[in-house]
Amino acid sequence: MFLQIHYLTSYHASLLNRDDAGLAKRITFGGVPRLRISSQSLKRHWRLWMMDRTDLPTATRTRYFFERQIKRRLVQDGLPEEVAHELTYVLGTQILTSAESREALDRTNLRLKQPILFGEVEADYLVNLIKEAAETGSLEEAKRRLAEYVSDAKSNFRILLQQAKLPAGFEGALFGRFVTSDILTRVDAPVHVAHAFTTHALDTEVDYFTAVDDLAEGETGAAHAGDMELGSGLFYGYVAVDIPLLVRNLTGTEARQWKNEDLEDTLKLLELLVKAVATVSPGAKLGSTAPHARADFILLELGTSQPRSLANAFLKPIELNTRHHAMEQSVEAIARYLDGLETMYGQPEETRFVASLHAWPRTYETRVSLPQAIEGIQEALRSYTR
Image 1: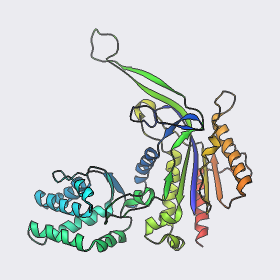
Image 2 (image 1 turned 60 degrees about the vertical axis):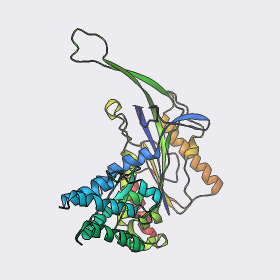
Image 3 (image 1 turned 90 degrees about the horizontal axis):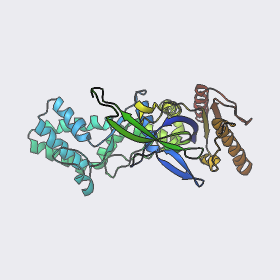
Image 4 (image 1 turned 180 degrees about the vertical axis):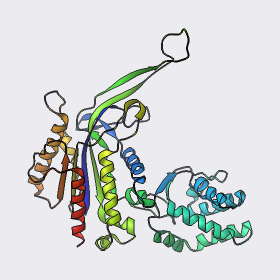
């Protein structure tokens, strides 16, 4: 069972996602360069927006987990700083079990070389574990007990973490977590996000800007000059969600048993995800470009067929001109491509809902509002479990 989200969003002059040279990210598709927004950028902005709108446990991707979330909480709860530091380091090296991972944790400042996603549930559990060890007496005894417990009971340790709801937070449940630790739970990502790209050829320009010194008396001209690449574009984006895997990540059940689980958390997260896709913009150059836009078109599909992107609708880029509306052309291109797929593969069994500011030329689906589309998908998903 998959939920697929296709969307079209148009942005005015902006710099949504930059490469290492500070230029707008781009990709060649169909032999034509396009503007691009990376999936990493999209997921981060969606995640931050969703974090403020859910009561589910959250997570933090950080290098400072042991320093600022474990040690700091221990000190705030009354443990001497030196004791908190040593016990945090011991526990960290036991959790990061490979030699390479152990070297990734700096003994002096407890910082990791690379950011890892840690859930607040995991932080709570580890803080309590250190507190219990510290109550045994001396520092050396507490360190020995921590090391022995984790070393001799790795499977139990992992099971205890897995029994907690969402150990890697809702972020891990949605977007996964890759770790090499034997203890931390690796989470497969049920949400697959494609890089968004423009449905038309790339068109950018270099914006030359200056700044004036307000206190420069008797001086003329700019106190600073710079430039940045700006582009405007209509982006096609695609998201596929593996529903059984998402339910497994949220509940801990086997994926094949997903229909037997309570789907309310799943339905709420899917609603938030669709709204984030439709309304949350990448945040680069907010102050100078205000790149706030909402999708003009959303197509939601729910069904058991193998997911497939509709990106090939734009293998031949649409032509920008004053006679034809770019968004309407893009919507029509998606409709034509769907018609072609169904002619070749037959009519699929997906449930579809279209929310669009523009006409939808197909007769198989009726345009509805975005809230109606989300509600329709939720009801269709519930019906599969009855």
